[in-house]
Amino acid sequence: MNMIGMTAWTKSRYLPPVLLVAGLIVTAILPDTGLVNDYLQFVIVSVAINAILCVSLNLVNGWMGEFSVGHAGFMALGAYASAILTVKLFPAAPPALLFPVAVLIGGCVAGLAGIPVGILSFKTRGDYLAIITLAFLMIVKSGLENIPYTGGPRGLLGIPRLTTVAWAYFWCVVTFWVIRNLVYSKYGRGIAAIREDEVAAEAMGVNTRTAKLVAFVTSSFFAGVAGALFAHQLQFINPSAFDILKSTEILVMVYLGGVASLGGSLLGAGGVTILTQCLQPLGTWRMVVLPALLVLLMLFRPGGIMGYRDWNWLKPRISFRPRLEVKADAKQETIP
Amino acid sequence: MSALLETCHLTREFGGLRAIGDLSIAVKRGEILGIIGPNGAGKTTLFNLLTGIYPPSYGDILFDGRSITGLQPSRIARLGMARTFQNIRLFRQLSVLENVRIAYDSGLACSPLDAMLRSPWALLRERESVEASMELLEMFQLGSHVEDRAGDLSYGAQRRLEIVRALALKPTLLLLDEPAAGMNPSEAMQLTDFLRWVHDKFSLTIVLIEHHMQMVMALCDRIEVIEFGVRIAGGKPEDVKADPRVIEAYLGTEGELP
Image 1 (tube, chains in turn purple, yellow):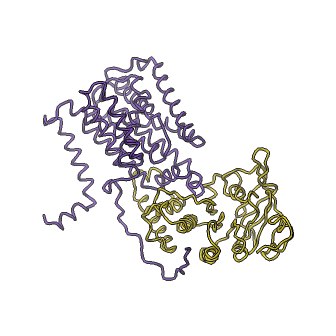
Image 2 (cartoon, chains in turn yellow, brown):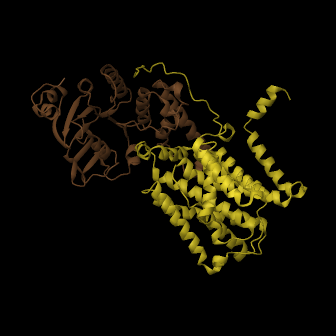
């Protein structure tokens, strides 16, 4: 293929969907090829789940500029809701049918829980909102510890292992696609305006309440999706898996990768997950390496690796050119 | 001509302090009204009450014949009341184009679900928003800066962008809070021409707060004078200029305003 043909192909609007479908086929047949062992598959699935968690938390903490520490709480709701479906209610249903429904319902349950937190964010912000999300996390955790139906503090056992590499990849793509669409839309710009100046946003007609609700519900929905995938990857969940440490882990990915950035979320989730695996031989010392890295990054690049920037291929293509010719009748006055 | 905006016994108290006391003023459709008064007279508080940022303690605000008291600020903005701020409040980290689009978008009908799925309907709205915002920026000679961060623009360009952003709301009433702040007399006079052009071009009603007397006298059809949250005088610029109460409020003793 000559150079011109190459450029036409890489600029084609059909390239991204073709690549994504190809990725799905590859991930679907990957486990059967024997090229990647169980451990590698586990790592790949973990990266995908963490990427979903990271980009969804980034919507609130990065694009909207709030500080939520309750992400693990939403994740827990998704994990438990989906696991109840697959373990308790329909253990005999065909997994191929049940699993997508279970993940979706896990997301919806978490999304519903995002509504009250979103409403509370109308009047509260900054540190105070962070405390509210912390309280939310504690309510979810201690709530789950006291429900005998889901095993109380011991947790839910015997969850079928349904999270394949292909499913994890599929949900990861869906999450990034939806959040990308959202942040490059009217609502996404409104959410960024809230971060920049909430009073000015309202004065410019941005309904900040709607924008906050959209941000919180979308963010918690995908946290729930990630929770469902997580539960069906580990096959075992208990309330203490979703404590403040889990939230902190996601926060580290967000701020390491870059706030308000899709590419940054991918880098953060991938980097932290793979680094934690690579640092296993260091034993306890790996608990020092990662935080030290974070300190260095905050000193030299406070926004993270990709803060407030993104790769062009992740941005939606603007398939129309704005009219650039200057209106001839426009009388020009200038302010020095 | 009927009144576009009316305040009836508008009062706002902060604790024991009465920032605005029993203020009843009317803004006629199509006029340029100046609001002057010494520092701390409550002029900016008045703007914040009009745009819904603070609720009034007592009184009512009528905009285009309907009461807007207690509405969310964004709702009031979408009804056609746009404003600028005394200390420029752009979305500094966002691009110039995004700043204008945020205001323009607020009038677009597009549900969150449409936005998330990037439906054909949402794409149409996106296109409309880019085109309209670009056209507006071109008209105000900011077309070459669309990709720049708003915070990186020069001071003058930031002031201009704030007005463009307000115009993207397609307002009927424009509130300007000290548009000439930080400008020298010759710049302020250029701004006067510019504002008059904006007023005619977009058939606006303008209310402006300004300390720059020459500019107020040259631009405004009518002036209201406020001191300690109370209206002390009002009328045509030349009458206000000669009013002894105004001179006293400004200078304390006998004297003449420039």
